[in-house]
Amino acid sequence: MSASAHSVIEPSATSKRVAGAIVILYAVITMIPLFWIIATSFKTPPDSIAYPPKVVFTPSIEGYCNLFTTRTRQTAEYIQSLPPATNFCDETTRKRNMVIAGQSNFLPRFVNSLIIAFGSTFCAVFLGTLTAYGFSRFKVPLADDLLFFILSTRMMPPIAVAIPIYLMYRELGLSDTALGMILLYTAVNVSLAVWLLKGFIDEIPREYEEAAMIDGYSRLQSFWKVVLPQATTGIAATAIFCLIFAWNEYAFAALLTSGTAQTAPPFIPTIIGEGGQDWPAVAAGTTIFLVPILVFTILLRKQLLRGITFGAVRK
Image: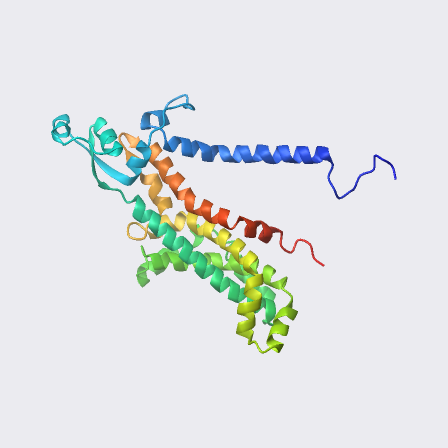
């Protein structure tokens, strides 16, 4: 064999370097907005709107102070009559001739996002797993048509059903409730969960369940002790996709919630500071909003990578 011959499967060193450079360049480009948001959260309001934009600046947590508090403007005489400031937020607020009036609504909205997003993700994955198992293991009449119908619900733009859902929720008393949002996001995500999980369950050999049932397990026991442990990778990957949708969803949250069950996405853009939009506070809210989904994805990153490539090579 010639010394210059190389494998058609193994990429050459040059191909690896070019591919690596492209991946790194793509990662840097996509991370620039994220880094800019985080940097803006540590700017002062004047620095955040400076032109040209300031890349080098003195860090400040004023944006985080403004995010978690509400402020009112007062006269200089009133501010001078107050006792000395006890913390950075109070001191910074007084320098702008304002005082802290109380806590903002960001924390309740953030908790609403946690409850609604994780609650709907659990329901969607639970129902999707059972449905996918039924389609995978049993002879369902018109199975292909039913699966296409389930998938077609994801093709419909949300705005097409926004008004009917709003009217229905108003009649049922589900407007501005966590339960209503969980049910809605579950209904939207369950179709995605069914299609993803069916592919994973199809890859699990039926012989494992048959052997378990021969040993005395019931169908439910074999599903619980044999299928679910092997489908963990697919369940984790599906949960991440469902959570990302529910966590970031804006249109339905803005239409169906206004106070009690309002989530963070429609609340963050409404943060108003002195003279207009408080960009450091908006950036601070966005930065904090990214943390749970980032942590959840990092914790399940191995399952996500395995889930994406699972079944790529068939016997």
